[in-house]
Image 1: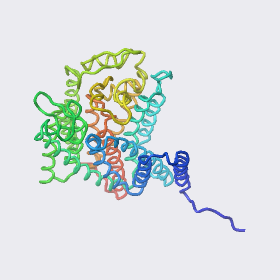
Image 2: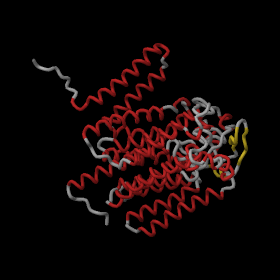
Image 3: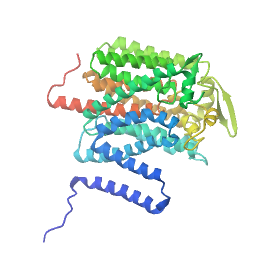
Length: 480
């Protein structure tokens, strides 16, 4: 008697995961029925489409996410305030995509693009945020601010894992770089145009003074399609990395690079000049000039630290919570951090996730807020991604973050040593994020953290695939 068997083969886990997702969606629909909002249905449709795209056509999905993330702040500000959760849907789709691709990679016994330390660091860092040991497991430790802190930290890291897991990474990398160059070029043109429009012209378009429109003296600080000049300058720096280390030399690269440089200057962000010095250091690394490269990196880091410690004021006068029902108005960056970091007893695991910084500010409103609410925000806008990590999860969390960044840098450095453009791009974007985080909370910033982490993952995956292919052909040669 013949035995009946389903032809699942090695795809049983994939089918089981898909069945779980279908069951969850069906349960939500059955329980809510007509009460399920149209926006929720659109989000579910978008989620399903993104998951399929990440698995079946990752080059299209990744290339499409870059302009969506870059233009989403402008869309949210001028036309559709409720569009913000689109990035959260994309991050959730990234989680599902990572799960599916990891199962498939395990089934095929494929080699991972980076060592196991990278995912281990990501899991450990996320565990610290979820457990919130610094919060003391007390009432209020797992409130809305904690949820936003976990979300804002997890989403870029999930996109990093997605980038590391994509199928056909070399093709994804090429599409992503083309999309990054084109998108950053358009954003730079809009930023340059803002200088001609001036504050009055931007007010007429629908932007708000002191919230969107900021000046330094008499000079308007361009912000392009993003929320502020700092995010704008960092994103254009990503584009400049692609121009310098991916595009072929020629008139087009020179033209695009010039426009991006002018756009960065229009933001009047001092850190951008130091990031430029660091990018020169990367170029020296590709030329095997280690000593001058180290000097450039050191100069960039020291210069950024000088800017951080000598600034007379933070981005604006804010109020920081110093205790139960007690708030202090602080202007200086270092003075604010004496309060934000707490005492030595708080240093191992931090003050608690969401006590200060981006998550605390995000918890002060639901989906949208008025301009007046934005002006009167009563939480401290932290000025360093590293200090923000200490405040959330302590020096232990900072140590894990440092190990993660170091392993990513080492993987990029190995690819640079083989003469791979993907390695140079990964190193460039990682340097931009790391330096920018010295003076602002860049590891949670949208869209720079989201786009940056995604592209770092894609670039390293592409470098690993290209290196493996060259090794199989016995063509692997050190970069001259």
